[in-house]
Image (cartoon, rainbow, N blue to C red):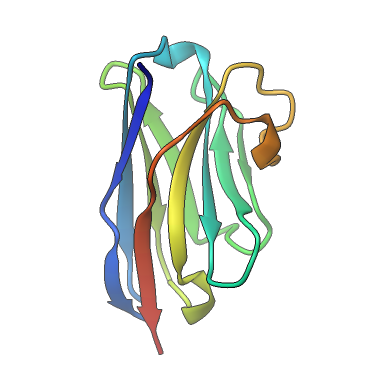
Length: 124
């Protein structure tokens, strides 16, 4: 049974930082492209960042480039999202996801497994 569990969300002021983690189990983690997505109230789920099975290359949405960094530790079956200079528009539920094929790392439809999400709230 595949399980993805996000942690690290919370409330932060604009300009602050948060670090998200996603722990994976039940899959050959190193074979999967892993991604972070987010969904704000009333909006569709959107791509944030992805990292290929080998640790690179990485992909970012234009809205987070230069502020967010995705990384992975295959020995720990985990991925991370370091978020700096947070803005109120970054407020959303953040999800991690696993994609075995990795053909479209920015497309949520291509991902096979999803976590339950963690709330990130950025106050102005």
